[in-house]
Image 1 (cartoon, helix red, strand yellow):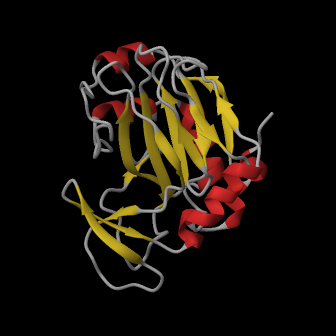
Image 2 (spheres, helix red, strand yellow):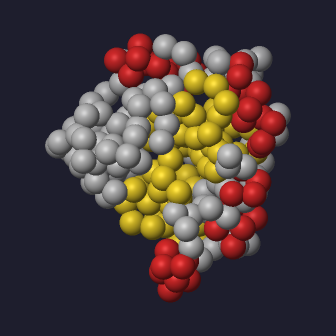
Length: 227
């Protein structure tokens, strides 16, 4: 069984109820390979965090000041059957560009300012991947290289070496299943062989003040008394 601290990822021991109803309310990804972004304020994100088990799990990892800072809907279908090369998630969305120690690689994506923070910031963050459809070997599952989240930010040649020499895990997840993953974990995915829906809500969570003196572009509290 995987362990978040040791391996950089783990599968929750529960499933989210009634994800089919949430899935029915989602926009169609269509042919957009990058998914639909900037969804953190959507009602269905609040619906997911109405599940006390999810809130307890996330706050036990990130802390009671955890906030959702980004949310993206991914899907793989016959119209958008894409692959993702091996990479780490290394950029965050911020309110505005301001000089701060360790922040660089500034960009604007979909109208939102992004920057690459120090590794110490990324190490505090957690990706919460809620599967709205079952994902097996034929659905282009997430592939990870365990324990690489402990290696900091990796250069391209280091990534290539790890891909060539380390074992890879494929994550098969039931409908309503939740994967917790550290952003610095090396991950990828292949095109699906079965082009039925493989919808995943990818939600990034962090301590509220993790990027101070900068501010998150969005910071949505996940605890019921603050939502």
